[in-house]
Image 1 (cartoon, rainbow, N blue to C red):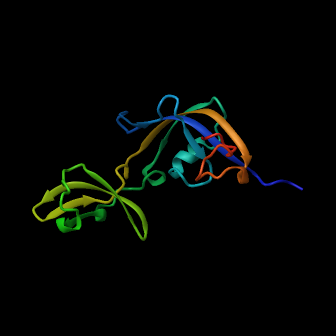
Image 2: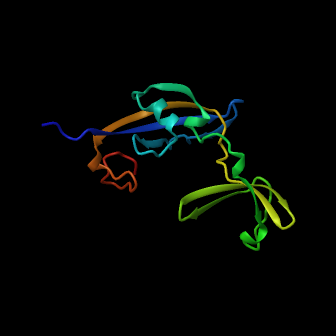
Image 3: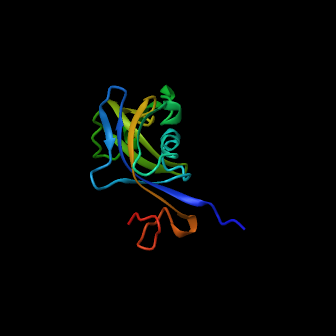
Length: 162
């Protein structure tokens, strides 16, 4: 009788660049990313690009908007009344706000403030952007999924993210 399939965790150093080569995000030295495969914790194209890598391997790959944060949707740019924001809210262009509704978490970026209205973009800031990733697998772990609660890491978790 075969046991349950093993849960795979990649410990990654990464750099994310935009199409111009500007670094958007990166792991900090000594603080790698722990990626539990198959948990839909990252964009589809990133997981597809790393899932078959081995420990010590480095890869560079691009992720299309469709497999990243989706294409830009101009219908997600909307004017909201300033009264929807806290009284002391400074509606500076470029300000991002995270929020939670009954439908889940979201984010908006203030584009401009016009009198009593605030023009907001509900697209993810990386929507429509081709993503360029460079990753190195620092460590590869495999263990029974029951041995790790990927939401709550503690000293008993077999994945090593403590």
